[in-house]
Image (cartoon, rainbow, N blue to C red):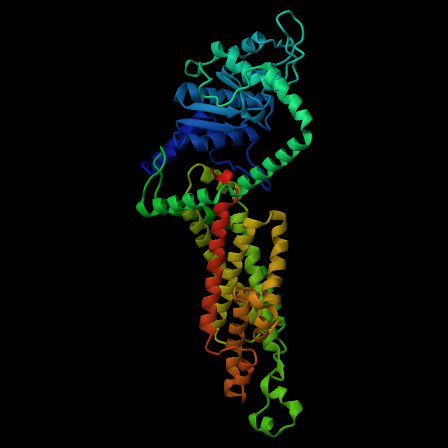
Length: 554
C-alpha cells in the first residue's frame, strides 16, 4: 500500500533480476492447455511472487519436485543467494535431493514417523552425529539418501564392538537425538527434555510396547480405527466453536478495521477490489465466455419450441356452466387446453439448469487457490463478495441471451420487463445453487448433480406435478421443499404474466388461476421470493466455504 505503481514495477524488476528471470518479463506462464515457461522458471516465478512482499521468513514445500538435478541445483543456489544477500530465512521441505543440491543448505532437520525430530542442526555435522550412534554410511551412498534410509529403519545400527544391535528399531531414534545429540544441537536447543512432553528414554520401553501391541492386536486395530474416524472428522470440520470464533473475529475485524498479525494487512475494500479485478480478468480475458452466449441462446430457443403451438382455450362460459350437464363442470373450472402451464415448467427448469452449470465454476475451479490465500491471511468476506459480484455481468448477459433465444421462437404475451426479470432471478437462483454444489461435490460429479437437482427442483417440486392443494395432505412436513424451490414460484409468475393477456378476451378466466391456487397479483412477490432463495443458497455456500477443509485454510 505504501508503493505507487512505478515503485511496484521497480521492485518486481529488481526481484526478477535477482532471480535471473528478467528475460521472462513478457513471457506467458502457461497452464495445462497453453504451453509457457519451463518448470524451473515457474518455480522461480513463484518464489519471486513471495519476495516482492519482502517477507522475513520464506517457507517452501518441495521446491525441487519435478525438476532435473541441474535445475534443482540452480534453484538451491538461488535460495542460498537469497539467504546470503537479503538475510531472509529460508526453510524448504525436500525429498531425496542430489548431493549438489543438498550441499547448498546450511542446516538440516530430519523428521521421523509422526513428525518426531531425528536430527536438527548443521548439515555438515549430520553424518558425524549418525556415525556416533552406530550408523555407518556406505562409500557410494549419498548423504541425503543415507539419512532418509535411517529414518525408515532400513540401516542397521552397530554397537561399539562392531556387532549389529538386534534390539534396535527406528522408534528409538528420537530418544537417541535427545540423549546423544546435545553436542550437535544449537545452543538454544541443548536441553530438549523440558520441551518434550513424552520421550521413550529406554530401549526396553520400546521393546515392551511392541510386545504389548502384539498381545492386543484386536484392541489396537479398534483404537486405530477410532482415532482415524476422529482425525477425519477433525480434518473436515475442525470444530464448531473454532469455526464460530473465526467467522465472528473476521467480521469484527471488518467492522472495527482492526489489523491482526505481524504484517500490516490491506483494508476490506482494497482486498475486495483486488479479488474482484483478478476474478474479472479470469472470467473475461480469454473470450471463451462470448462463445458460451450461444449456448444460452440455443437453450432459450429450444425452450420456446414448446410454446410454438400456442394453444390456450380458457374455461367454458359461465352461462354454459349453469345450464350444461354435469360432465362439463370440470371444463368450467380448468382451461380446456393449457400449453402455457407446461411452457412455464420448461422455462423455469432450463433457466435454472443454465444458471447452475455456470455457477459451479465460480468457486469450484479455484478451491486450492482459496485455501492457499486464506492460509496466508486473506479475509474470506471480501473474497467471497468479489467473486459473486464479478458473476453479476454474466448473469445479466446470459439471462438476456436466454430471453432473446426464447423470443425468437415464442411470441410472448407478457410484459417485456416482467418476463426478462423473471428469467434473471431464476438464473440468479441457479448460479447460487451452483455455488453450493461446487462446495459439496467433487469436480467430476458436479455437472451430473446439476442435472439431478434441476430435475428435482424443476420437475418434482414445481407445484404442478403435485398440485399445491395436495402437497400438505400427501407429504406433510415436507412441504418446505416446495417453498424453497425457485421453479415453484417461477412457474406461477410465468403463468400469471402470460395468462393476464387473456383477461380481456376470455370469460371466466379467473378460474384458470383459482384451479392452480395462483394469484394474478403475485408476480412481483414471487420474483422477490426467488431472489431471496438465491441469497439463501449463497449464505449456505459461505458456510460450507468456511466450514469445510478447515485445516487447509490455517
